[in-house]
Length: 415
Image (cartoon, rainbow, N blue to C red):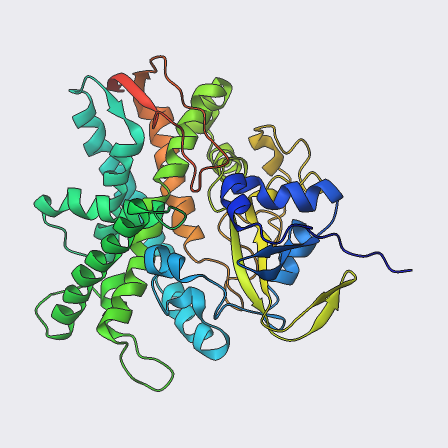
């Protein structure tokens, strides 16, 4: 007799999803040592996937679609409506090539150098400050870095407003009430800002280097040879800039790791291989993306579970990164685990999994790695600071999560 896939007996678990946060899917799937589990969200049957096999199914473009999977509240805050995250098939592949064209070795090396340059500037400023809240400072640092790299002109007086709006877009997707409303407003302001720049490029009023994100988005043509609508081009350009600001959370977690595991600091400073391993472990160990959604393309059965056309499916991003079937001692911070790691497509998925060119894996993973490695290396090599007593614990119920104190540093000096 075939084993039945377990499911929640409650009528709806939407409120529990927000209450449990990052642990909602692991509590169900991993507790049963399975790859699939059924729950109900917003009155609908939802399949929860986890683990390497679950991720492989989730990123099977013949079985899963992205269109219709993301709720409006996420599109109106985090990603933008009709953005690449909602596309499938040839249209998605064509749009994906636009993003991949930005990820040349030269462009990524330029991003790494820009990141270091801004760290030097900010560290110089911090030497005169009584207290530095790293999260707040690196949000602005990364906003400047991202705009510079993307070719987006940023007036000095604009920096605080643009940084704050990008941060609100990131933090508001799971919020309710006024915080969520303000997140939507921040997106509208940001889209209007970038749309005006797109129009200026098309009118020849901005002199841009070919290959920058602003230039390429403004001049991109769809499968029918038409330029993207100016607002749509702005939405996709924000999908280059916003994720780089979002990794200020990873930077803050990395600072916590350097403090909690001090033996890592000299190796991060002096060993490029270890620097890469440390960066990957920060991305694996700490919470970032909780889960991602897709819709079933057609009816099929997998591991005794009957998937139905148009059914919502969620992949457990955080839980897969902590799956004991994949990672030995998953709740231990251990950069050395990546010494023998072969770079699987479906095991380490902090920003999604699968193939970059043929699937939905986020191309922003490459810029993320460049920015994080440049940042961690700078902190370990060139920054001296004291860490006063503070609470830099973090909650797995808050999405996205962050150390409570934002990581406070005092008496910052450069060496």
